[in-house]
Length: 381
Image (cartoon, rainbow, N blue to C red; front, side, top):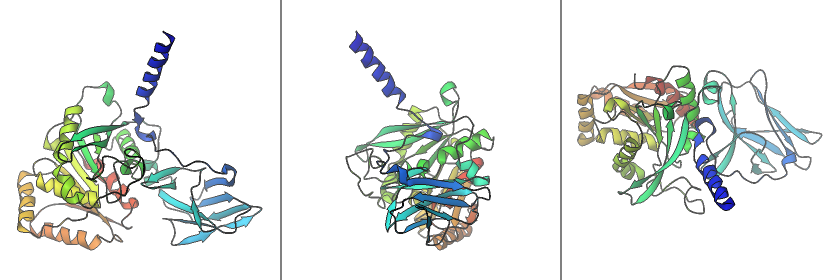
């Protein structure tokens, strides 16, 4: 009897551990902590400048680099403590890297996230954008990692699904937003780097966005899931063939979601968006399924082009069927900027209406988080 009780308790613990709450989703195992006494973290000052502090009397040279500066800066040592203070920074989420005697390290005393094969540190400056990207005292949704069967790819595949606060306790049907990642990323990227769960939680709590389900897929057709969630070792993603292969299988994703969640199974209840390769996926999927999505978002989209008559005809079919939002966003320093402007011109030539958002920045998460934060309140109105 005692053994049975232990087994039952263990099963309950395992079941409880299968859910990850939206603003505190489960992370892959962190790197082992080594010599924790040398790490002293980051201080965000009252003027939004940031002071980096690193304790290591044996170090010869310590540098910091990040999105908030060009190149790197050298920390100054005093009594074994290395420090550097930035100029005041704008509200945003920033990644940074410390380098000690030429070798990059992970600051174990400050916030960490994972970008496929590497761990990175980050900090968030509060304010207009930073507050949306941060965990706030609001009702939180739930992120569940699910597996669906892909007959076309002949494998089981992992997908992350965000359900809004209150989903479990209601019978309401919800619209669905399919959110796709870019090259060298996976189904975790919008959660870990894009702050999708925090953005949704905060905008919904503020009444700026409709409660919705968000589905984050793996767009790499050769992968079942993100590295560390399948296989024993990290495998480089075979990503770019996905522009052709992944969209062909997307009907399987929709079928899985609509058979497992309470969804509004109509065009007005579906949205799709993505960045980079995922923007190319969203472009391809929406034009190949022209009566499926009322809302489409292309963030720094790769491969968006309707120079061929057959591609142009698909967009004209979508135009005829009607849609509510076609959102295009790109940073002015993005290497795809000219391609995006060329695509906008193609849309102008056929009278296809779209919303265009331009911001500073390159092919990075800064603009993509902005585009997501701005598009979400436009959905399902």
